[in-house]
Amino acid sequence: MSKTLQVISPVDNSVYVERKFHTDSEINETLTHAVQAQQLLKKLPVSERIYYINKFIDAFSGMSEQISKELSWQMGRPIIYGKNEVNGTVERAAGMIDLAKESLADIDVGKKEGFHRYIKREPLGVVFVVPAWNYPYLIAVNTIVPGLLAGNAIVLKHSAQTPLVAERFADAFKTAGLPEVLFQFLHLSHSDTAKVIRDSRIDFVAFTGSVAGGHSIQKVASERFIGVGLELGGKDPAYVRSDANLEFAIANLVDGAFYNSGQSCCGIERIYVHQDVYDQFVDGCVELTKQYKLGNPLDTETNLGPVAKHSIAKTVIGHINAALGQGARGLIDPALFPNTKLGYEYLAPQILVDVNHTMDVMKEETFGPVVGIMKVQNDKEAIELMNDSPYGLTASIWTEDEDSAVQISNQIATGTCFMNRCDYLDPYLAWTGIKDTGRGCTLSTVGYEQLTRPKSYHLRIKTQ
Image 1 (cartoon, rainbow, N blue to C red):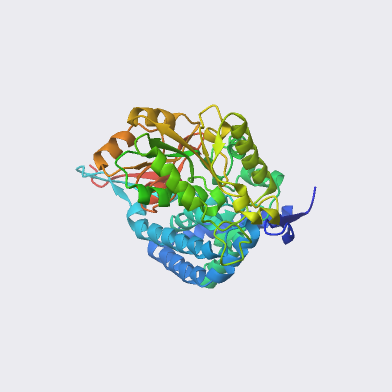
Image 2: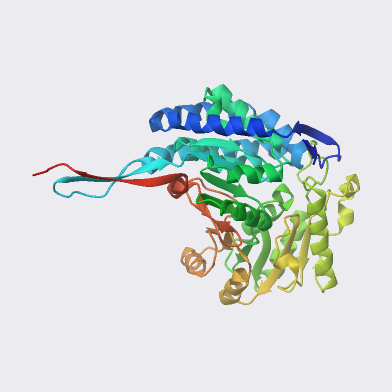
């Protein structure tokens, strides 16, 4: 087995980063220090933990330019969008700070004569965070910041595609003055990742990735009685009703489908449009999509970069070609995007119509710059199609009628329902999913629950 980790950049297929995997002795030292440090952190009041996270925010914000450039090289994100990741990370961290005191306060269960009764939220101990590469800071911060605020030590093993993210987190926390052993990172092979999960010093695992990866993590963790949070992706639908603001819906859904080259767990992968506005909607999406500029992500004119990996490009191309072979029509001529010649990962965006649910592009996670659009007759048909998926992360409804949006949302099997919005995480709302999207929850007051354990205090204060 290789002793080094290599990041092959989708920009030019060069080796951009090379790091040695941490050794067994280094892993052991990291976990030992984490356990020791966590015992000190749990004694600090929440206000002192907040102090460190505020300092982290200041330090992290100052790294925006460096982070943007590194993201472009590691996973192909256009550099013009790099600051969005930084700003989003700060927004989520600030939101979790705002919720911390309320979320971590003791729960008074009410008066009872002669007794004092309450529930305390205890930190779990050491939290092992294993995030995905596609939104590498945004995914990681969902657990790292509330985990520390809750009094846990954090050990981060980031994706092999984005190892520099772990190092930048460490840099920011060091600048913030957080004791280094409270936040540590490890560069690990798959086998060593499994060893860490099996280690008795790990108390919780937060994983974001593929369904197959989630099954592997769950299988290893099942050997122990520890919690596991799994966010495993989606095939997120949108429904455009006849009363929708079409110009607004088109702009937002095209962005929701193609931002980050479609590499988003909650990106728009399938759209259902009421028959009364279908033609107008499709025409608008096509015209807007033609305006994208595919190219080198380090070029400030580029707003559509390459997908991160050869394997992703292969899946996307396979889904498109299979759909075309089954009767779908592609409305975007790839010749409009000559920079596809830059490499296999440089994919032109594509809109497919005449699609149906026998096609992988409408059922399986594609994770690339392609979206299928289907015509529907009414709300009932849209709901049935939206629910016809093994995933359940988010769904969006585009309408001017809030009551109808809520009624439709009540019938959709998903973790988040949007009206006139998509592809966004609000730190004050629970981020969760059902079915093959996984289980567990991050963000909001509810997100603190999986990072703490309840401990009951039943105190008799009057005795005979």
